[in-house]
Length: 136
Image (cartoon, rainbow, N blue to C red):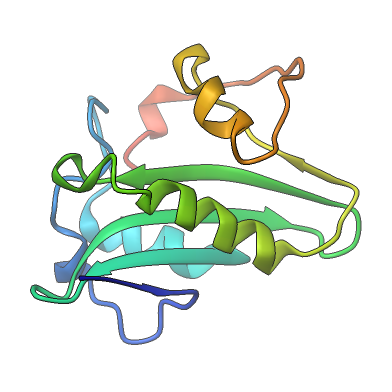
């Protein structure tokens, strides 16, 4: 069974060791991942109740007034296609509340996923410092 929380209270780095940041050549360690979660304005976590491991997460940054940005959403491979990612996004959107703009960047193959949650495509720009990808 999957349980959800909108808080990192009591979460340990060991609970994040399932293989997040899939495909990243230099992923954050579980300890750095926990720092990312704790530093986010909004977080949604999915736990496998049988193992107490985190199996999915979403984060958001916001000014609390006008705008928010959703930088990260990930569900572990063995837990995908169960609605967990959709639930995580809905929980983060609900936590953010009614602000003017909520933005995120995604690969083109993910547009359909986000469309079904009410987001629409828009133009964006980004800067990536891959030498800092691990967060260290």
